[in-house]
Length: 237
Ligand SMILES: [Fe+2]
Ligand SMILES: [Fe+2]
Image (tube, rainbow, N blue to C red):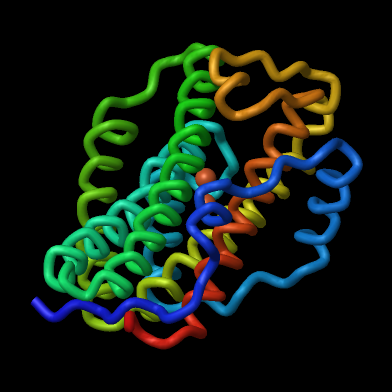
């Protein structure tokens, strides 16, 4: 297997493991307005196909169950990048400087997937609280298959040409950012609904459910920006 060369420069390990910044209420409201004023990216074919498939399977409406599926899938590119980076270290361990730089990429990917993991668990909890029954086929089995296929695609693209995988992820994150901010706009009643969660200590406290979703939308923007920054860099070296 040919592995991508590591990027020469990038965020420091300490910085990349910190995760996206948590914003206060005013900054979150500003972030929502910024997203709403920013056009969506021109999505590539793979991203457009994925979004169409998700719309066909889960409807065009913004439901918490659909966002849960999005979050399940959102984690896997980071897992694949982490895996490719670990394999690369296996191959180049005797070049310690290079191996150290690749390890920074591992830390960055791990931090990104952890952040997505909290999104997923918080969504899971909110969906459960809503009550109602989700179809096992549509909300368990199909998301597993989608995640598996998306992992393989991300892994393959990253191995062949890292910027292809980063581009696909930037499209995915841009879509998620806009969808979350649109979700907040559709639910003005969430401004007064408290965010109560067993994951509040892990992910952070928020004044309201509206602020929670603005923060998640902002996290997706940061993930998009990180992928765009990586896209513009050279291959691993
Ligand atoms: Fe997410
Ligand atoms: Fe994300």
